Amino acid sequence: MTSDQNSTSEDRYRAPALEKGLDILELLAAQPDGMSQGDIARALGRSPNEIYRMLATLVRRQFLTRLPPDDRYALSLRMFSISQRHPPLNRLIDIALPLMRAVTKQAWQSCHLGMENDGEIVIIASVLAPGNWGLALRVGSVIGLANTGTGRILAAFRPRDEAEQMLARHKPALGEPAIDPAQYYERLAQIREVGFDIMASDTTVGVTNLSFPVFDPHGRAITAVSCPYLKRIDEVPVPDMAEVQQIYANLATELTEHYGGLKPLKEA
Image: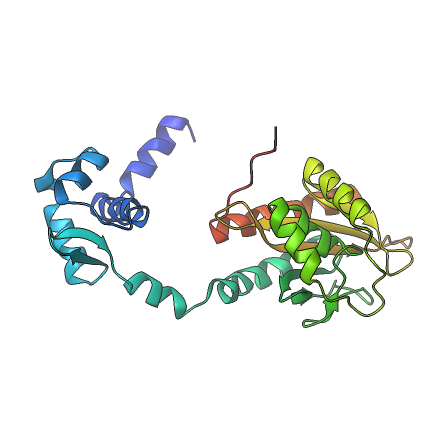
């Protein structure tokens, strides 16, 4: 299909009224003090009459409210209320699990997601590799911060002050050694430079940890996609480590997109 055909296909499925409404919501999300109808129209490059009916509809459906004394338009709490019916983390796990099952079948390797919670690194989702054997972490397992790929990824792709806070409040996992801060921050810098973590396991012989960040809309690692890679030496035809690395990198990118996340800019 040519680019002209692609453009024609995209135009065919556009919903101008919906896009106009979304433009208004996104604009007002960054304006806590609200905006007048004229200001909204100018910011969006439209006439006041063009957006009047859309504003009236959004007010009627309670997505917008009018602020006294000059009746500026502002976001109501309705969107927040709707979002709380399906928390982002639950939604991410719901989206992630079928994708994780698909990639474990493709890679013949297990996969898990981990996040930081109140000083602990916790496994929130896990899928075992297909076949007769594999290595997977149980959901709810608490693992190390500095001696696991998941922990290092979660700290590496946070602002420095947040990484320091994570270290300060960290509760050591079972068997986790003491953390040398200098070595810890040096390793985080290396991970940020390459964009992921690959390292022989610090907890199990014969395992190579592959870990990739899933970003939130602020460019912070909200969770980590990790694979405890085991090399097969039998006759089963499976992807090699380089292929597995790409499979799981693609999964992390896809989950970032589903979450509405953005990759952070590299520091100068």
